[in-house]
Length: 282
Image (tube, rainbow, N blue to C red; front, side):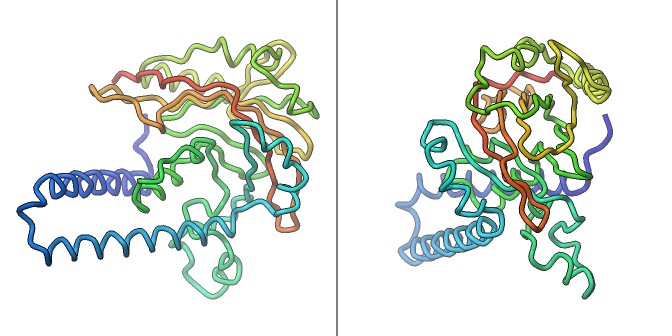
């Protein structure tokens, strides 16, 4: 497979650094009796500062990406159900964080979310990120989201995530269940367990597969009022470790319920099923 983009490697490095920092923090906790009062105070102060920065940064991002309140009011009854949610996704305008280099770019991108994709990428796994994760680790997971709104399409999947999406037309979202015909192909699909097999499967899906009257692929045109079904398989890289909250196999249905003047779309979603991630062997 091709080497991952530079930003993927940077985020991988960030995750490793965060893991090492967490390990050191745990060791400090276990041996805190050997730490001076001054050192304990400094550690506590730093933790509070980190938590404050995390809260402020995530609030700023959420303020930009949140669905307008009128949608939350309109779909309040639907959102009372477990495993449901509402999200806003923006078209990709090439406004990635750190890419604003001149005044024109600032005018065009200054009001976008300062994260990878600037709001044009999304993952239903983001709703499951534990609160205890440090900020940089959260941002790294956001950067690896598997749904990308670009060129008028939902393009799904990443280097290590196999996604299959199908447009089922203006179907009532509430009517989509695990017993629906539209879900049959997704449920029965058997992912390969090696990188080579996954690559071949992605090539086949890119061309599209028809089953039970529906077209399944790695992309779908974004259409207002249409409902989509998605299977998202975040492979677990075999290495003797347990799977995590991120490495999961999701079945989700979502509906495009609104479009804003800035080109963003509002999607209403519900998770149909989730299981452990399959192991991807080298």
